[in-house]
Amino acid sequence: MSEITLHELEKQYGETTAVEDVSVEIEDGELLCLLGPSGSGKSTTLRMIAGLETPTGGEISIDGDDVTDDPAYERTTSTVFQDWALFPHKTVRENVEFGLKMRGVPADEREQRAESMLERVQMTGYGEDDPTNLSGGQKQRVALARSLAVNPDVLLLDEPLSNLDKRLREDMQIELREIHEDLDETFVHVTHDQDEAFTLADRIGIMDQGELVQIGDPDEVYENPTNQFIESFLGDTNFVDARVTRTTGDAVYVDTELGTELVLPTDAEPAVDEGTALTLSLRPEILSIDQPSADGGTAADDTGEQLATDGSSRTAVTGTVENVIYRGSTVRYSADVDGTSMFAERTDASTGALSAGDRIRLEWNGADVLAFREDGTRVSL
Ligand code: ADP
Image 1 (cartoon, rainbow, N blue to C red):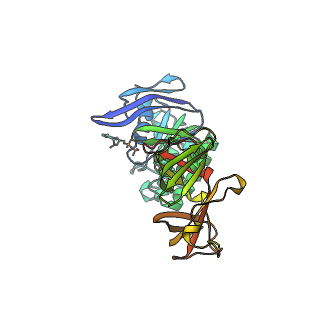
Image 2 (cartoon, rainbow, N blue to C red):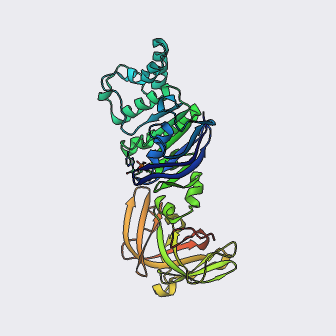
């Protein structure tokens, strides 16, 4: 177990700023996922913690000791890479024992420790095998055992599962989580896969263009993204263009490209002026799907009705189903709402299935809508 502090960490490669002003305290025994698109600086950050890259600015300390200039072999970290990097001419056991041998651990103790690590990653009985004959998942288990064998204080994982197929990747995510719980060590795990981060992490640090743009519990970053990039990166959503028409003490009224005015309830005086352009985010899970009532009249009558009978600012629009996509446990409907494409999902495929061309009614609570300014910052409502 160890805590890691990154203070204003920076890495420049010539003109390229790979990592900029990253500060974070990684807690003892926590599993932190660094999540972001390709090229956002995750790997470089991890490699600096490992001592495989030298920062061009800032400091790294582990348990209070400044290790910024220490070489990798002097650190109490161990790294698992995406490409397994097993030695092909050594047996599985020799691979797992490698780090221990380098540290001068006697042969019988090495063997014992290697066996127990292989057992931990469910590879008992493979010790004498040639690693080149193993499957991708097995190779990655051996690589993990090798990294854990040296009993590191901090395990650094650089996209370790991204070469595995979906099913195996999901199994390994659960196993990694269990191993982390058993060992109680600090893990820093780099991934570009949102589902992986949500499955594994105690906290998620989101990276964008070299910066750590938000860090928090998984539900916190999902429900309270600080900017539009994070909102779009963390899952599919409907972005709807809007413009503020007026504000009151407890609501923002916006005209939208859905051809209707919407009400966004606010807790305090909202920090937006009349005329401000906004992008609204309506996640599929806040939208409930219905068929318009038989006497509902035309789309124009139905669209944008405010249903605030219970004070919760419920709003509905109607549209025409364009596509129905079965996605296993859910069905995704995309619909044309006054010329704008919206999508929503239902979990139960059997109830009242809609087909292309049918009228559809989408309803939501205005309080569940997020709003962003043109510069991507979130409007607090
Ligand atoms: P990620 O892990 O999020 O995909 P990286 O940390 O690998 O991102 O890369 C961040 C940026 O730094 C990218 O623009 C990448 O091209 C650049 N970069 C990374 N390593 C090097 C290097 N050794 N030399 C030059 N540029 C690099």
